[in-house]
Length: 618
Image (cartoon, rainbow, N blue to C red; front, side):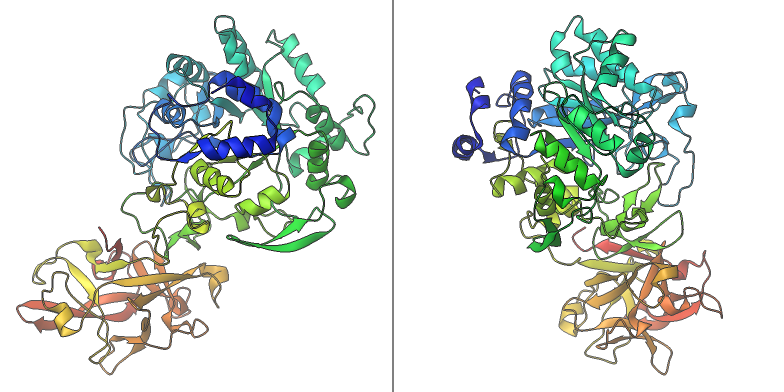
């Protein structure tokens, strides 16, 4: 790519970019912009007000562990503009590239994130040797040949693989900030271009001004050209406002946080590529207008000028950043519990939180930084925060976001390419979003070909294990042409369709109901065409029935799926004791047993009360 492209204005970029931009699953970096081109492009992202993505955790997959050297190499091959990874300190002070505060989810075979059981020590309690003696796991718990790299190993591997992406180290331990800067500086003595590729990211409260950053680098013997990416948050602002921050030369601001942000925002992009703001909605803007996007309704600020923001707010920080044509950074969350999970039902079901025991919509579930399941963004709202709409990419642009850090850069790149807002010099090639990633972002944006609006599942007693006397693996069946009771029979029932029976169902999550404050989200189980749902109404023989009345106000069709137990929601915290749905032997149908469903007392280890939900395509 000709370097003169970097000097073109946005209108010219759009014209040229249309000709060169493609949407293919690229597998080699021969056509990628060079590292120098990515570095040079930093001068124009904020000025031209374009969008770039930053690949959070590298190009992980169902087989490639997050934050591994293999994941980063995949990012280089896919021409990623930038990568972000986390840095934590080991017990002996090594700079470990690792996302979680605890190691169980990624390094311990015996740890189960869904139950928070098994070994899960803090990474800070282990030495580098102890950490690197363990092999990394994929999200599907497969043991791989990868190990947790150090910052130095990441830099060395980057050089060895001719990496061209910009690389952000997000520092989780304050004292590691200068340590990473020194590691970059040391490598730059033999590879000077490292200073143009690697960026130190940290909370602004730790280094409140660019002048303080320079003082720190010089004091510790680091190179003064090490790039920095500070982020400002409401909690960081509280700390900064207790400091004494001077006004930048020739400028006047009312509060310390504004002065700190201005100090960083006024620096050249090749020293401070962007300033990131932690903001979750438009509440900090004085006037907004309602807009509708593919991801729902959002409030668009009528202006990003300071007079449309509240004093000291995160919106005010955005106005300062944008006034200096600095690129604005934003982290866009994407529910990560289901990401790249193989053979798992990832829509229409719930997952149990290990912190409070409530059921969460699986498409809203995030893994805690301790590695266990799970929380929702709604649960992380601050005292004055009404909602978190950071996933809404139209909203992100309405507040002026330029640098989007996200687990799913493919969807971000594709969406902004379609909006003609993608920086086509930094990202000339976009990668088609993958269905296998299970990205909620790509689902919301309708970027996946023929993605179903609902799941298609089998429900099997005994967790899908073959049952003696039942002819093999057993499934739940509908029964609409007969007397409507739910029944179980061998899954390979040859004449099922001819006899009017079907075993494919779909489930729907109901997040708000009479018992949601204590139980969390519930599910409904529907037949394939959604005409009937399973209820706890019973016939004369006390068998559960399929019925047409599926009104969620009447909780008879609501169930809590609690670690393979199907519990009617009204009996989840019942005064008479918890009850569950059991499979019971009803008799013989042909040469094999068949069963029906009933409600009985909850017994955790009763195998007749264990159910598995499986994708019908598996």
